[in-house]
Image (cartoon, rainbow, N blue to C red; front, top):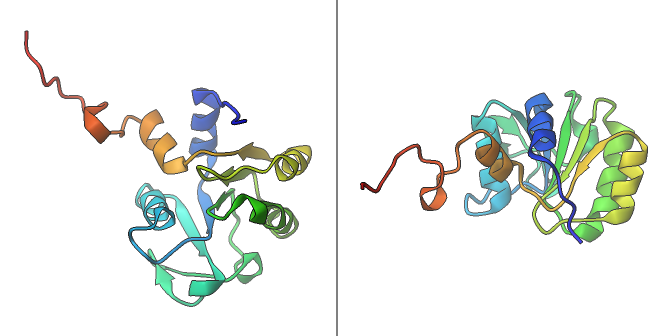
Amino acid sequence: MSETYTDAHLKQVLTATKVVAVVGVSTNPVRPSYYVARYLALKGFTVIPVNPVYAGETLFGRQIVPDFDSFDDPVDMVDIFRRSEAVPEIVDTAMARIPTLKTIWMQIGVEHAEATAKARAADLTVIQNRCPKIEYQRLFGELRMGGFNTGIISSRL
């Protein structure tokens, strides 16, 4: 069962976040992890791409790292693009290695009740089954799919 989050809560999380480690990022531009990471970088977030498969390659001006031990940046949020069964290990490792961590964000289709409970018990914010790109666009007036919120009135009386 999906959780619900208030718009105010989601907006507060996105506003407070400056550095995002994107776990499972792809170098393939048609993959959601690529275009979400790219969007966040274009919006001014510092994006740390994390994926052992592409470690050493460059993405959005940053070197892709294999794991949380491979960087020292103060990270606010971990955005997880992995299957739900991979979440517990990612959450445990992030909590152990990233002292500045405030938020665990799980992408659309990704949820894990036990890992969520553990992270919340450690005073972290957890958002499941949502996309920060979609939420940012929706909450900050940028969603333009299908004519929504374009600011243009397209019909006349």
